[in-house]
Image (cartoon, rainbow, N blue to C red; front, side, top):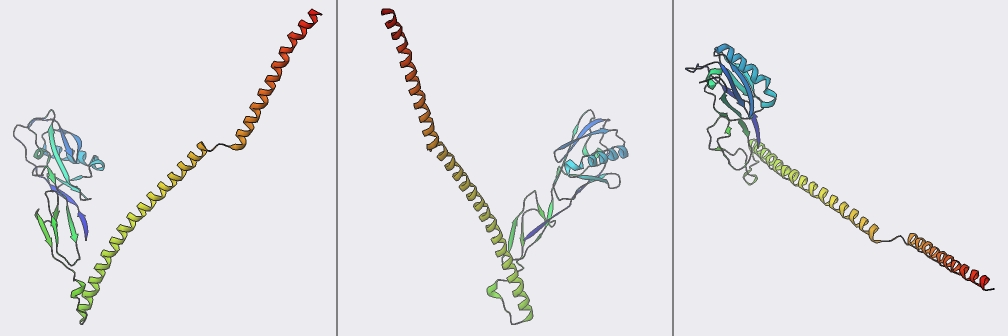
Length: 250
C-alpha cells in the first residue's frame, strides 16, 4: 500500500464588512503571525495580504495567489492550512476583508491511496484526512489481489493473475524482512556498544585494582634505604656530644 499527499488548496472570497475601519491586524497561518495594514480598499488589502503571505511562505509552507479579486492559499507539500485573523487597531475586520472569506479555520490535506492485496482494506477516516476527496469516515478499498490458494494457471489471464498475486506476496515478505533486518541491525549495534563499554570498564577497574609490582618494589627499596640512612645519621649525631664530654673529663 502506498499513499501520496496531494497539494492543499483553499480559495477565498472578498466581501467588505460593515463598519470596517483602517488599521492593523494579524493574520496567523500555520502558527506564524503575519502583520497586516488594512486600508479598507479591496484591491490594496488583497494585494498587500498576498505579498505578506508569500514573504512568510518559507515558514508557513503556504503561498497565496490572486483568484480574481480574492486569495487562494496553497500548500504544495500537502500539509494542512490553518488561518485566523486577529484585530489590532482596525475594527470590524474579518477574513473576508482581505480576500479570505469562506476559507475554513483549517483546510485539511488529502492523499491518494494505492493498494494491492488479498483482503479488503478499511481506512478509519477523521476530520484531519480525506481519501481521494471522499467524505470523512470509514473508506473501504476493495481487494485487488488474489489469494495464492485460489490461483488458476490453466489460462493466460489466470497466469497473469498468479504472477500479480505472487509479486504482491513477495513484496509483503520483502517489506517484513526489511523491517526485521533494520530492527536486528539496531539490536546488534546496541549489543556491540554495550560490550565495548563493559570491556572498557573492566580494563579501568583492573588498572585501579592491580598494582605495578616492579614500581612498588622500587618504592619500598627506596624507603628502606632512606630509613637506614636516617638511623645511621642519628646514631652518629648522638656520639658527638659523648666524645666532647669525655674530652672535658680528661
